[in-house]
Image (cartoon, rainbow, N blue to C red; front, side, top):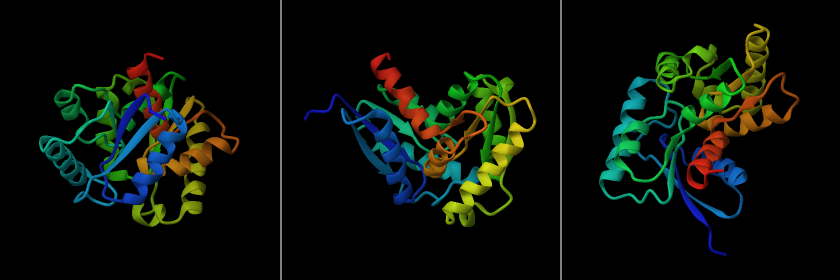
Length: 220
């Protein structure tokens, strides 16, 4: 069967397993008529947790396309700091979306939203992205975990439990209509949280990016 559209999913982190899991989430959202190629950003941190990691990931991704990387029919930048997103939008002739961009814009459609994330050192950059995307006034709160991100992400059950407790905490504020799970490596956790009787809409940014790029390419 000939696929109708071809998407390049870039994991700005260097962990191939995370790339595979995010690609699964995109394929589940887009369906069998879409081809999803995977790219792992070799040389970047295994998890981007700070400004230095964002800068390194950005430079490596730009370099990859300077060498002639095929963007296919569209590109998903699948790390929550959206590294190199603006540069790739300027460089490439195909649609490019970021998972933070997509998750925030989708969550803002519900009204006020929160972000829960395991990367406290990206607090300011994420707020800056909300400002850039025009939804800073909708971002009610950003809540980060206290456990080291590398440790927490190595314990899937503990990760889901911790995120659910954070969701309950932000919803208890009374001014949150949706929650974005802030991280590409959290794709499986976001899916589990959304399926388990959540107290409000849970936006997984990876499938949100798939929906956004589908709309940009097909117009629906």
